[in-house]
Every structure is written in C-alpha cells, then in structure tokens.
Image 1 (cartoon, rainbow, N blue to C red):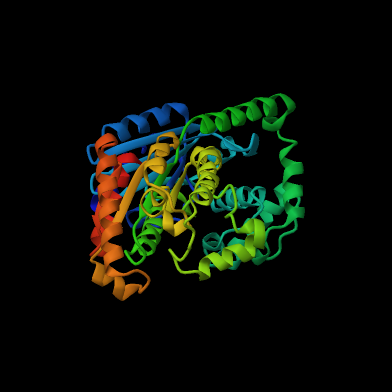
Image 2: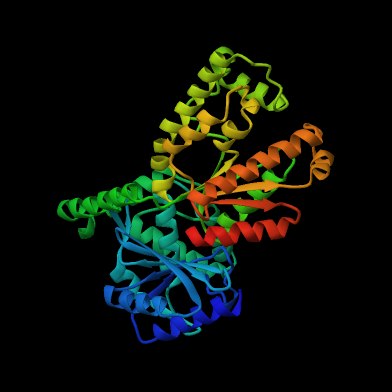
Amino acid sequence: MTSIKNNFIQSLFKILQAEQYALLKWLREDLSQLADTSDLDILVSAAVAQKIDLFVRTTESIAKVDKQELAGVTHYFLYFTNKDFLQIDLLFQFVRKGLVYLSTKDVFDNLVIINGIKTYTKEMLFEHVLLFNSLNKSGLPEKYYQYFKNLPATELNSILQSFNNKYGTKHKHLIATTLFNPMLRATILRYLNTLSENSSFNKIINYLAYGWSIWQQLKEKNGQIITFSGVDGAGKSTIIKDTLCLLRGKYRKKVVVLRHRPSLLPIISAWKYGQQKAEQKSVERLPRQGKNNNKISSFLRFSYYYLDYLLGQFYIRVKYLSRGYTVLYDRYYFDFIIDGKRSNINLSPTLPKFLYTFIAKPDLNFFLYADAHTIVKRKQELSIGVINQLTTKYQLLFQDLATRHQGLYINIENTDRQNTLQTVLTHYLKIA
C-alpha cells in the first residue's frame, strides 16, 4: 500500500483514538499492509460519522469522494491523487433487508484495543461474520476459516461454545461452518425474531428504511457504461479483461461484460435454431461473412437489433446501473454505423447514425486501433485494406461524436498494453 493511502488510514485512526468506534471484520493485521482489494468497515455513532466525513473532505491527498447513504450504512468511495482507492463503510446498525441481526450495544460492550485500534472480541467477530453470511445463504468465508482455524484449540472451542450457547446451535467443528446450512439459518432467524430490535413496530420501520434505500438506488444511476470498439485483432479482449480485473480488484466495483448489445432480444438465428445452437454457430462463424445484399432484409435486421438497444437500455439501467454495476461492452452500437456487414446488414450509415440520437449515451467509449500489419499477424480474418478502411471510418466517427460529447469518445492506439490501460483508467476516474 502506498504511503498516501497508508498515511490517510493512520491519520484517520489517530483522530478516532478518543472516540467510540469498532473496526469490523478485522483480522488483527497491520493496517499499513492493507491489500488494495480491502476496505474498512467501521461501526460508529452519528456524531463520529460527522467527524470522519469532515476529515475525508478536508484531506488534500483525496482527489474525489463519492458518498452513498443507505439504511444502516454510509459508503465512502475515496479516490486518491495517485489513483489509489479506498472504500470505507460506516455502519450505524447491523441490518439486512430490514432485519437487525446483531446488537450494536453488544459490539460496543465487547470492545478490545489491538495495537491502538478498537475492534471487537474474537467471539463477536465470529458471530458477526457467521450471522452475516448465513443470512446471505453462504458459509464462513475462507479467510475467516483460516484465521479461526489457526487459533489455539481451547480458544477456538470457547468461541464455538459461546455461539452455541447464544443461538442454540451445536457446532463442534469449525469446518462445518464453511458450508451453507439452511437449518442453521432457520435457527438464527428464530432467535433474531425474538429480539426487541425486530419487534413488529421496529420491523416495519426497518423495512420502510430498506425500501427507501432500494428506491433511492433505482432513482439514481450509480453505475457506468464503458464501450470498447475496434476491428478484430486490435486487442479489445485483452484490454477489457485487464479493465475488468482492475475495477473488480483495486476499485471494488461490481462489473459485468456484455457483447455488442443488451441482448434482451435473442440473436435472429435463435428463432430458427434455438438459443444455444444459434450462439454456437455465431461463435464458429468468421466475422463479415454474411452475403445479405437485400435492402429490405437489412432494414428489418437492423430494426430488430435497434429495438433491442431501445428496450435494452431500460433493462440495463434497472438490472445493473441502478445497482452500481459498471457495464463493459465488447463492441457497441457503432458497429451498425461503420461495419453493418459484420451483422449481415447492408445499409447506408446515415440511418443508424441518426437513430443513435435516441439511444442513451454510454459514459465512456474507446476505439482501439493498431497497425494493420500487426493485426493481421494476430488474426488473419481481414485484409490490410479492409482494416485500414474500417479504422479510418471509426476514428472519424469518434472524432465527430467527440465534438458534440466532449471527453466521451476516445481513440487509443493500442501498441502498449499498460499505456492503454492507464489511459482507460485516467478517463474512468473522471466519471467514476
């Protein structure tokens, strides 16, 4: 972890030194060695949350702060000046879908201080992670299993017995907790429903708060759409894979990769061959091999796929963007403008380009290109002449679109993998 991010974390906990808080799901590691993929979960009061908010917003090394307030938790997404990232989740209540599953009083009553950091006891740690994952229909995660497994046998047995006594369970071996157990979940739910925090009145309040959070998420477009275009062999797949790993790993983003279009409607050949066989034939067939020269047939094909974009944009918004996903498109609508032949469509680009007006614009669009001779060495699917022709058309289209939507359409010569990825990242951080 870099010194900027490390200094921020050290300073944060110095500020919290005299406050009541608990660092959650912490395995007693050195915070200066926090992995890029790790975040900080902290149980706080509203007053302490205000102090953290002020500290975050006045720290000069933070270039950008995104804040999301949901029922029982506030998420901070911090982007540092050196492109590092840290997510901080401030919890006020342990609640899942309106159900309180752990008492904040119990956590604060079981605080311990480890190397100057306030956290909860190992018994509370085990209880927290097992309850959380059981309610989410999963078992104890591997990293927690390894942590508890390496404790002295007497200490581990004491932790298991403490949980058994409280919840009426019969855990004898830690390994059993790594698998989801429906009976354990049912037992936990019976116990939780007896708590005062989950009385009929409180449950109604909690469910209303949960429903409000869902509504707020649906109203806001929390995710982004990023498209990658380019002729076959330009290196799109590699850069998309690198971007996927970077966003998921370092920036803790939920990411989904879509190919070409929303696919709310199946490919046309699926109506004849069935979805599975049609997709298989599509993968096996080389691009731009269609022989359709009929204008009416081409118009109908284009209309079908255009309808998929029109309807699909709302589907993508609800299913992914409202839930904070970053959607990566491997190819996009621009193919219909520049390379309709790829979809066995023979139309003038004028109509597809005009109709692009009515499609929601992605947050970022990248056109990747490379030297035609280099591309032919990678994939012998297109001639050098065709590659150069398509590349020029794509570049001119992106330049034209960029004049109306500045910063959203970027041409990148993909000659160096790391340089390309850094360019993608630089533009992404502007819209994240």
